[in-house]
Amino acid sequence: MTILNALGPLGVILLVFVGHRLPPDRIRKVNALWVTLVLLSSVIWSYPELLQGHWTLLLLLGTNLIATTSAWDSVWWGREHLNVKIVRYYVWWALFWAALITVAVADNLVLSWLAIEFSTLASGALIVEMGNRRALEAAWKYIVIASVGLFMAVIGVLFLYASLRFQHLGWYTLDYANIRSHASAINPIVKEIATILIVSGIGTKVGLVPFHTWLPDAHSEAPSPASGLLSGVLLGLCLVTVERYVGAAPVSHSTLVSGPHLLLVLGSLSVLVGTFALLAQKDVKRLLAYSSIEQMGITAIGFGINTPFTREAALLQLAFHAVIKSSLFYVGGHLSVAYGSTHLQRMTNMVGQHRRLAIVWTVGILALAGVPPLGLAYSEWMISLGLWQAHLWGVLVIVTGSLVLGFAALSYHLIRGMWGNQANRLKNEDVEQASMANALIAAGGKH
Image (tube, rainbow, N blue to C red):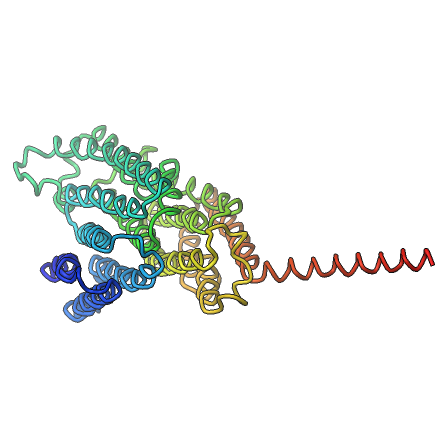
């Protein structure tokens, strides 16, 4: 399985270099077929363990699933952006995929940190490939902010290693299993400081408030297939990394800086900021980006409640969000090309002009808004129930209120996009008819 996962990204790089003289569209299709083959092989190879509900394996297969959809969307997206260099695009795309696979399967805190740091460079390079000034500024902001956050995290990692160095295990000192086994040997103050630094540092890559400022800019300029991986997969895997560490090195719940407390606070802030920002968005990709902040906040709260029931709910939330949000980024990218703008006010009358895209967009937005029986409605209900059972009334009010407000905001943008032009046209016709009637009345009065 490890060899198969390593061959996936490596195969993409080899195929693009070997076939660089082929027509670009054929290269894209061959790469998409290769990624699909890797996904199918992974499912067949790991089928017995899948039946047992192995979550790490499910994270890996989910990563490969979204990578497959991203590869196929790259075929369509590449036809719309012929200025993007195909070799460089697929090299960075493959390296980004490799980093995501590593984060999904890593059982070592240092390896997780390295893979997350590398994902920053690879995904930042994909943003730069758009070849305009805004993309360069967004990539620079993303890399700088994420790197500062990860620098904070590595300081926390060093504190942990210093506390456990007596084992003389080298690299294996920071295996999650080893940290869990020897957590009691870590000085409580050191553990608290390390928890603050690691949760906040890696939380920067999750997009948790107040470390979220890079996310809307990066999403608004990234290639749509890359945004699908970035929002659908990377954010969730980074949050899973935080949860793995918090579970391995628990801090006493009597302190306010325990991992669950930090996740509840940062999650609540993210839900509030993400939801209120939905109301004011005018750019389609920034709308989806702020929705990701809200969704990651809800998931962080699920992990922060810290019960088996809510942990399962949070993982389900990540799975549903990955499929829904990646699909919306793909469709949003194609709608931006079709309308020649990312501005939501210009994306109107989708039903009349782009019916197929409008159907997928409608289903995705309704799912994102939490409309039953679509997936997020179920996982969000589970997390709300977990808050009720844990008597976290303040957080429950924040979550339920934000879900209602988020539903209203997304519904408003959806209705305006589906039939906006028709409403304006009917309004203009009424105005014209009223003007004509007034003119006729005035003319009749003169006679």
